[in-house]
Length: 197
Image 1: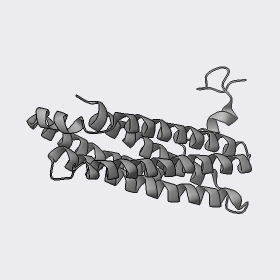
Image 2: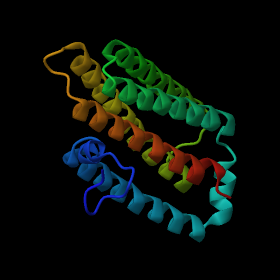
Image 3: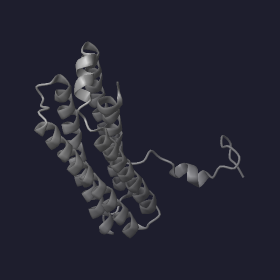
């Protein structure tokens, strides 16, 4: 029977357990990071409008295939991490560990492919002396640092899940939130640097 103020058919026990995933501090950090990146995206767009032809000429030297592959790699990684959270909540910790490790492996693959792309661009003479490539190296470089930090965060998740006395779903959720932020940032960077004309 429903109590006053509740919709018929809702489960009061389930309603009590609904919450924002992860820790509030992680959400504050993620939102702060998104604001900082957002400001840089605005600056990039302003500079691009000042020299659209120059940015377009430089942009044509990027390897769109590598950009697409890296996007698919990070989206796949996010899928693994999302699944890890779901199975960890269900108490299947060994499976959550395997999924987290798979997500981390895709993160390493992203870093290797991005490093190869940087090497190829530098070998081709595309350095930060060009305004577009200056933005390219800063945006992708800062993002690469975030991926590296994310891999450490995923390592903490694996450590948490392996130790029965330390298992906290809030920690698994918080670390997943950080990893999804890293992936979201890459999708925006990919759109700005590789796709936008």
